[in-house]
Image (cartoon, rainbow, N blue to C red; front, top):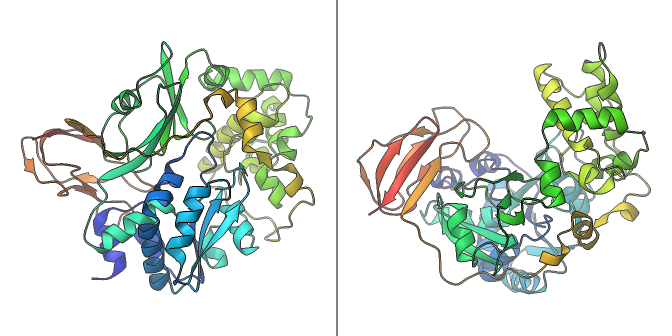
Length: 438
C-alpha cells in the first residue's frame, strides 16, 4: 500500500490547527518539504514537546513524505529558543538528508507564507499555497502521525498544552474526544473563578466559556484566563459593537497595516483601508473588501498594533465573508516584493505577551509521561478541512480501539475518524458521535 493510502486510512490531518487532510498534500510533487515547528502562539508548547520527546518519529515521517513528494530539501523549522527540542531534532537528523532550520522568536513565524520565505527565500503568489512554489508544509505532530500511519496506526491521540491560569501548566497526550475540562483538571485545575479558555491560542484561537469542548485532531491546547481578562472581554464583544466602535473611532493611523505580516511580505493586505470601509453605507462593498482578501487572520492588527483598541482583524474577517459570497478571486499582480522594514517590524513574542497581559503566565509546560484517559469521548464529525465525515456506526455497537467510526463521502475531501479506545457507541448525532469506554 502506498504512503498516501496509509495516511488516508489513518486519518492524518494538519495537527497545528488547519486540519488539512495530509493525504491530499502527499499526492502532489514538490522539491522541498518543511516541518512546521514554529509554534508562535504565546504559551503553547505542544510542538516543542513533540520534537523534544519524539524527534525520531518526526524525522521518520518527514523522510517518508519527502520520498512520496520527490522532495530533495527536507527541513525541520523550529525556534532557536526551544533548545531541548532543537537538540533532539538535530540528533534525529544526523545521518539523514533532513536538516534543522532555526527561526527567531517572533509572531507569526508559523504562518506558511512567512515560513516558506524564511526557509527558502521564495514568496508564495497572492492567494496561493506553498505548493505553487514547490514546497509542502506540514506540522511536526502531523509528521509523527505519518510515521505511525505507515505502520498501520491511526490518529486517535493528540498532544496539547494547558496553560494560563492553571495550577500546573503542562502538555499532555490525550485521547481524541476528551473534554478540555478534564485536561484542565489534570493541570491542577483553574486558579481563577469563572474561567474562560482560548482554544488553540490567544491570537487565532476561539475564546469560550464552554470547558466541555472536546479535544479534536486540530486542538493545539487551551489557555485558561479569568472572564474579566481584558483580551477575553474584547474577544467576546458582539461583532456589531466591534464594527460600530471602529466606524466611530478609527483615525486611519495605519499602524494595523504597518505591522501586518502579510503587508510586510509585500501582499495587498491593508487593514486600515478595511476599517475605512466601515463608514460605507451604500456602495463599494465589492471593492473595499479586497484589501482583506489575502489576510491570514493572525490578529496582530487588533491585539498588538492598534493604539485605540479597535478591531481591524474582525473587520477583515467580515470582509472575507463578503468576498466569499461574491466568489472573489485575486486578479492583481503576481509580483511580490518584501517591504524594506519587514525584519525590523517583526513582533517579538515577549512584547506580544506583555501587550496581551499574559506575561505573568509565561512558564514551561512540560510533557507529562502518563497519557490522560477518559470514560467518554465526544467525536465531532468535522475535525478537518473539507466536508464532515459520515458516521459508520450505530448506537449500542461495540468497537475496538482504532476501529473506523466515520469516513468521508466518496470523492469528498475529508478525514477518517477512529475510536480512541475500546468503547460502545452511546449516540450518533448529526454532527458528532459519543462513545463510552468499556
